[in-house]
Length: 192
Image 1 (cartoon, rainbow, N blue to C red):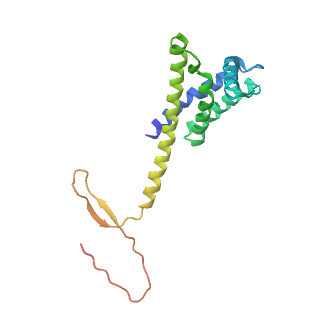
Image 2 (cartoon, rainbow, N blue to C red):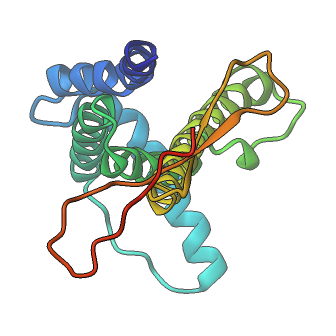
Image 3 (tube, one colour):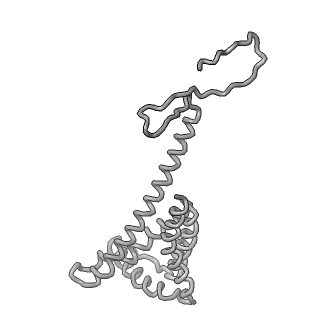
């Protein structure tokens, strides 16, 4: 079971790690193709926010956004492979920042082909990745809760012995005996 869990985390994180590796190889002095695509989206976002808020939004160097995204994907993916909650949170942060900026389907009309083919389906894929990370974090929390509740009941008064086909198991008192020099000495008779 642990192997399949590890394999699943490797396959899931490979999406982020391979994407970060590709972004790193293409980065260059101008940020690469990721910066070129992101610069158009950030400019549209700045225009929308400026018009809605009535305040001029300062220029953002897109190379820094690409570097931050690359770092979050790479480090978060590597930590996630080893089951780290921090890695999952880093990947969630990367998805929460980049997804609405990069896949801005809400700026297009549903009648345009770019809406249906590219933006909306990619947006939904990122939402699915977001949901899978939230599921992972929920399972980690549940597993920690189960371990804590199991530790709470380690000192059970009885041990249950029986077969799976039996309706009721046989209960044996769970106790530890030790020698004592206390007076009076008690004599315990075997009940069996």
